[in-house]
Image (cartoon, rainbow, N blue to C red; front, top):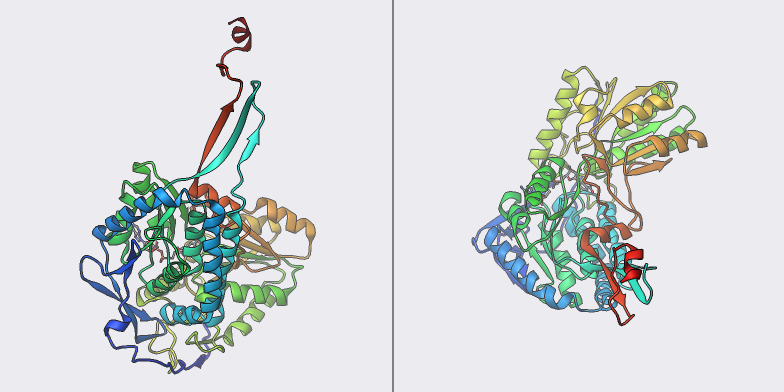
Amino acid sequence: MRSGPFLCNLPAARDGPNPNATNMTNRHHNFVNGHWVDAQSGEWFENRNPANAGDLVGLFPRSDHRDVDAAVDAARRAFKTWRLVPAPKRAELLYRVARLLEERKEEFARAMTREMGKVIAETRGDVQEAIDTAYYCAGEGRRLFGDTVPVELPNKFGMSVRMPVGVCGLITPWNFPMAIPSWKAFPALVAGNTVVLKSAEDTPLSSVNFIKTLEDAGIPAGVVNLINGFGEEAGAPLVDHPDVPVISFTGSTAVGKIIAERGGRKLKRVSLELGGKNAQIVMDDADLELAVEGALWGAFGTAGQRCTATSRVICHERVLSKFTEMFLARAEKLKLGDGLDPATQVGPLINEERRKAVHQYVKSGVEEGATLLRGGGFSTGECVEHGWFYEPTIFTNVKPQMRIAREEIFGPVVAILRAGSLDEAVSILNDTNYGLSSSIYTKDINAAFRAMRDIEAGITYINGPTIGAEVQLPFGGVKETGNGHREASWTVLDSYTEWKSIYVDFSGRLQRAQIDTHDAEKQ
Ligand code: NAD
């Protein structure tokens, strides 16, 4: 085991009021029916900076089923009018949201880094994803295509149209605090639905900033509502509510299964975007510099806390030692620290509980016989001692059956596995319960196309890392990563619309369909 000293960045000095003051100014609210309100419990929960646990970001309302009921009631009433607003007009609102987000990008990115730790370049990217999604979905306001099709009978016309479904309950994780709410809310809204967003308890400030932007853009009261609080207290009542026909959930597979079961009892449409155990294959003809660069970014970007993070590198045995040596050398130089410092490359984990969970996985790797090449502990040093930092960790000699090779760790831990051929590499890659993202580095076009065909995943990158997505392509995974839905792109509209088939008979007489034509002619 090797674990070199870390280059750390001290937290940047912050302007403004004492962040620890629990005064009224850093209390935030729910947004229900166009008003910012407290939770009916009168209780609050804390949001702390994971890079510096002494820094209290704010207090947020601890909501329960009463707040959910009020928000759903407002959304249900607003749906009656919002669904009748022409889609291009609904889209105009999203264009205004996009422009406001552009103006506020830096402010929101800094707030996001403070509340969830990822480095400022990544939080700018998170807000940018919301901007891109707003523009993309606004464009859908002038499409929302249905079909016209030929019909069997004369003087008759057939078409299909997308109809909004009603109140959509959106339940989101903390790792993309603005991008993921935007992936859900914007397509739901442009399609004519109303929305109740349950923020993630670790990142409520970004949800407040997101909803405030919609308010400032002029969203009518009740069309968008925000509930802050915990999963069982505030999320579950949304899933159970009889007036919420759509649940769109992004989070862990464990919680996704609970939501699928609860929603299924009421025959709701439940869209699930869940965990991953993503792998990068490195073939013996790969550009190794590029492959190392990709693995470094994929494994340690966002401190490994992305659903698409590179958790495994499956390396061809002919380049295994060279790749490992180059990868290790680069990992040794990573700079940990406060994400607000532009020199920081790896921020903290989201909270102490997650840090302990990551450490348990590392211990299991050691116990099961993998070689801990570097890392494997809580980071130490002046710049990281007050936050939930974990050392970038690399395991070698990992066997496919080990827990670190099979289960989602959601931290800066990467397992390197050996493969003797493309077939073996693909077979190892596929040997998990998950199927979100994947990648292969090779110069052989035949190998690339075989990988594209045979890898079981919703996303495959050729000569790129497993992380990174663009809004105009479907996003989601197979197996226990989801239940067949896709976010982003035009495909997301299937989660937020019902197809209606419409027949227009302009013959002026009864034309009976679905009876035998000869019988019909005799009558
Ligand atoms: P989580 O499942 O713990 O929580 C997600 C959300 O669900 C939170 O808002 C939480 O309050 C809520 N929740 C928890 N229990 C609930 C319940 N019983 N009923 C209703 N709501 C409940 O996940 P997390 O820790 O916030 O996020 C990390 C996970 O999210 C990882 O597994 C990651 O892979 C996954 N993720 C997936 C994608 C994707 O698109 N596939 C994207 C980002 C994150």
